[in-house]
Image (cartoon, rainbow, N blue to C red; front, side, top):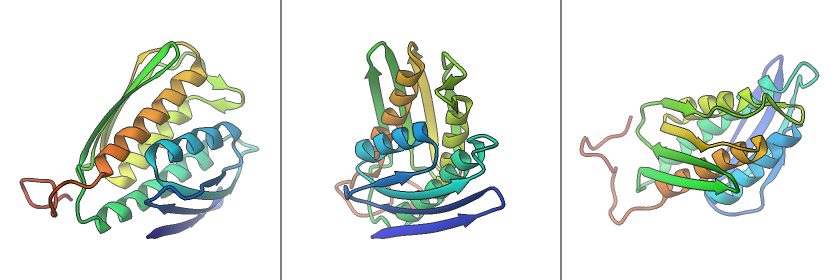
Length: 192
């Protein structure tokens, strides 16, 4: 199934689709570094994502980055609600040369982000690295995930952020994987 959503504000115009398979993804955010990270995200999560975005990048990349996180989170929530079974929990450690990132995801219905990444530099190219936290906060809140992201070892800032995106993608893939039995993976019988 393909989930689609648009978001049009005075600052951004977005059209995003998400499919729960490994189709061809097409990412065009207008922010080169974000395109690179989201392309890695689609590969490692095994989700197919198409993004067409325009925004006020002449100001900075904040609005586009945050709004993409919001819409992707909303689409992930729709995907989870349609699922008959999933593992619920996912954990992934990713080394990127000298760096090491860990992400832990719980499809809990309770939005919470613990983002512990002391990134080495304030910019990668023209991209403000503080936007990594903004992106994941928007995504996690809107997808209603409990998520812990930790940069355990730093080094090159590009590697740090790439490790974070890959570890989150792989933890999410594990959490979304079908479980052996039908039904909600909660002793309460619901996830909300």
